Amino acid sequence: MKTRHGIALTAALLVLVPVAGCSSGGSPAAIRPAEPVDVHELVHVSASGEVDPAKPFTVTADRGGRLTDVTVTGADGRVVAGQLAADLQSWQSTGRLKAGTRYTVRVAADDGKGGRGETSSEFGTVAAQHLLTAELGPDSSGSGIYGVGQPLTVQLSEAVKDPTARQAVERGLTVASEPAVTGAWYWVDDRNLHFRPKEYWPADARIRLAYDLQGVPVGDGLYGGEAVTRSLRTGDRVEVLIDAASHYLTYRRNGAEVKSIPVTTGKPGFATRNGIKVVLGQESQVRMNGESIGIREGSTEAYDLQVKWATRVTWSGEYVHAAPWSVGSQGVDNVSHGCTGMSTDDAKWFFDQTRIGDLVQVVNSRGAAMEPFGNGFGDWNVSWDEWLKHSALGRPVTTSGSLGTQVAAAGAPLIG
Image 1 (cartoon, rainbow, N blue to C red):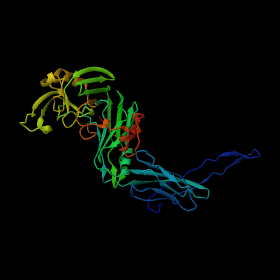
Image 2 (image 1 turned 90 degrees about the vertical axis):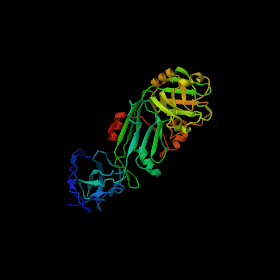
Image 3 (image 1 turned 45 degrees about the vertical axis):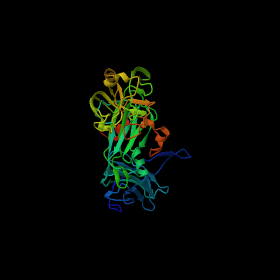
Image 4 (image 1 turned 135 degrees about the vertical axis):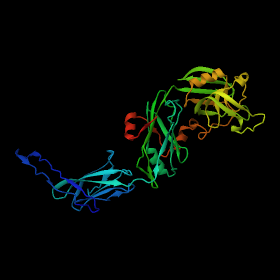
């Protein structure tokens, strides 16, 4: 037999077991069981073949019949949320269907004449033609251990501008950590999001980021692409304070001062940026050329040097590095072109004690403020209240929950 729309339904008849009761006279009274009936001609679905996942899926019963239960389950075992009408004549999905997915529909109904039965069917959704994929960060090229200032990043394959679509993206992103924190997403632009806690990450935390929108409608014909995850850990809480006025760097680990180092920072016209920065990378030796920051070759400010033990804090070329040529000014004056210079021995020590994601804050410089985005990670210079305004959902999220459970639920390969 077929439904109105041509989907064949296989009837699984429901037989109810008689229940014994007690009459007022104390003698047992057998309750007549419901008559098992074939209900597949009574029940109809909204579409056949490959259906549009952006539209709700409905089940209806003929007049006189009633739906008593409807379950729609995807191939991954997830049940689609739905609502049964008050008159029990119809059911409609309220949860989203995924693109390119097979679903099983199970319906229990009665014919209004004392007969009951069950029927089942299957349908598929049209495969997505336009996918939104995500690249998660930090990347997995390092050790997997980062400083407590490291933001999580998501770069989308397509621009997402619509507020509702952005909300869908945020709902498809899961951050789990042990210990748990309160954090939020910030839309840097139409394709890039950053996640950070309200405060820094705890030391020795385990963190996993999951993107799980596979097959989910995002908007304008765009569907979530392949699910992916990223895992990382934090190390000790390392905080570096560079005071451009006192010309000293103070290195703290887990709240305790470990070392104070004489330094020189940017001189007038090249003053070092104020604010909180995050270590981006490290190079044991790097060539530094004045032309990379706009200094004309042959001018009195020109330079071309091989520099050792360089710890990068901005993409524009600001480092903490060895500067043996300026040892006489370190702890006394600011003579650099924007970097923080120190002796070779101190730079080697700093290099060995620092990792990507550690925090470097500059105070009392005459330079501009560190940019929040685009020149490294200036995320921590944005107030929490301002940060929340740039979340599509407009609220913080908690990272509590089992790391294993959340990653397994994403159904995604682990990277990192």
